[in-house]
Length: 155
Image (tube, rainbow, N blue to C red; front, top):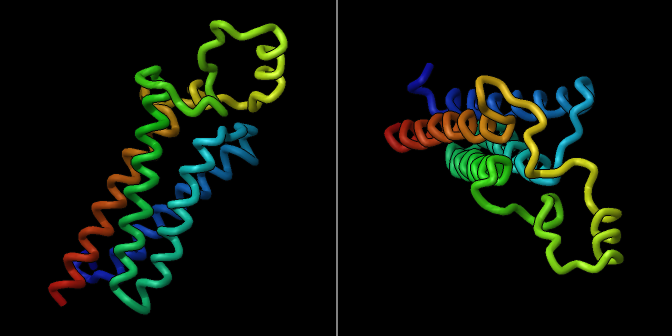
C-alpha cells in the first residue's frame, strides 16, 4: 500500500480533508471563530485535497499537494510564533503598539479590529495551539506527499 504513489497521495489528501473538516467542525459546531491567519491555513489544505484527485490522473500532481502541505505548515509555524509572542503578526489581526496614537486613532483602531485576534491562543491540546497542530500534522502530510513523489519516480 505504501509503495503505491497514488495511494500515498490519496492518504495525504485525505489528511488535508480531515484537517479542513476539523477546522470547520471547531468553527460551526464548537463555536470557535477563526482568525484571519486560521483562514489562511485552510486554503493550502484545499489545494492539497484537489491535488489528491488530480494525482489519479498524473502522479506529478503530488508536487501541488506537497506545496500545499508545506505552505500551510509554514503559515501554521508563523501563526504559532505570533501566538507565542516570538514575533509580531499582521497589524490587521494582532494588538500591536499604541504608543503615540491619538485618542481618535486609537478608537478607530479598536472599531476596525477583528473580533478574533491572531495573537491569542483560542484552543490548545498538550500545550500546542491549533496553529501548532496544523504545522506538525501538515509536515507529516508533506512527508507523505514527498514519499508519493519518490515512489512515482521509481515506478
